[in-house]
Image (tube, rainbow over all chains, first blue to last red; front, side, top):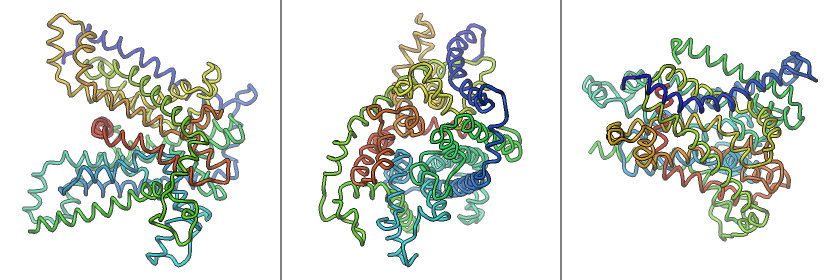
Length: 286
Length: 274
């Protein structure tokens, strides 16, 4: 549709109230948060950031956030693409299986997911220990949420379960856009299923994979309720990420200035990540 | 023949994957109907010998119904506010070309990467100042930075799929643009708009951080806060907690099953185009 000035006027008159509102409700709080982080007792200062960087837990929190993100994103990608490939095939009752495999974990509220996993991980009454012992994988019950390394693994597994559906949905709808002729041609050339995946599917999906991985990294770093409910950041801060730690600083110790500095730090870190990621992996395009 | 073997194999894989993925939901439902004796029995009881409703009765006695009503109110307010705000901008983005259109759309998407934690303290202070702290409308407003951009994207996708000729016919008949929108486009896209509303509903229904922070008194508790406090305050009483979990899961799972296909297209198109 060609643009003309009358239409442009109408469009802007419909959109600009929303943009103004959006700036008020989105940009204003973000700036407000930066201002809070730069202030103590009415004085402009960097002391809150100094407190963040010199916090004895700072390296641990960064490390936890890194492990939590890498673990969750890697497996959400693998499970997501695996499930998408499965559901892109033809077999009976596919709508039902799509609902059972994708919708159930996606739709389950975060708090409910956290409580359910926490119960399943229970060392004495937990079904996970029981099943693993029945399968002969372990010979005695593990303290899943009580041990530093096991707790890290436990929250990541729960997060893979909760988060893979959105990746699977994106890959599934991308797979549907790949024309069958490409696969037919590869088949005629004698390419095996793996080669067809590697040489046809993967290159065609690669731009979408890059975007989705970036989004899941950001979502994972920002994701709060699962850890809050499952471990509260424990044991001994082993599952505390930037976000759960910032929340506790802000509201358990009601230190808004330092809490705001932690939040702004997280924000800047994500911003830096997004810029570097798009520049290096996506050729500067967003 | 090979085709049949392949189909059977795929079906078997799908059944196994579905069982593993759905196990947490199944386990939570089973646990909510177990007697305490069987919840805490070793070895673990997989098929309860007796089904009890006492955990549901207990959950009702300690206020799950009020929390449920609060969650419904909060989610409906969020949904209505979001749709009202997003409708006309989405229509304009879909139908008109104008300078700065793509930068505007992109900036809406970028804000989706903003961490929620950045908003929590400023929103608390803002809601306090305008007198909406510890109120459901206050929490609903705090979701708008997150729900409106996504819903604008979903709605743009819907409007794009409605043929322009329909409105052009209305324009020829002498309707203005806005009248054409309300008389022609809106009725046609009602199911899709409902789906976008459901998306906002579910976001509000499931959210924890803002509800936990902005709702401070028991009578304002939503399901998220109710379940969380249930775990923290008492020696965790797992029975009523499971019952509460089942009750909390029903609306979003039912909604998603019914309407998923409507909003998945909008959601994934955003990611694929981006």
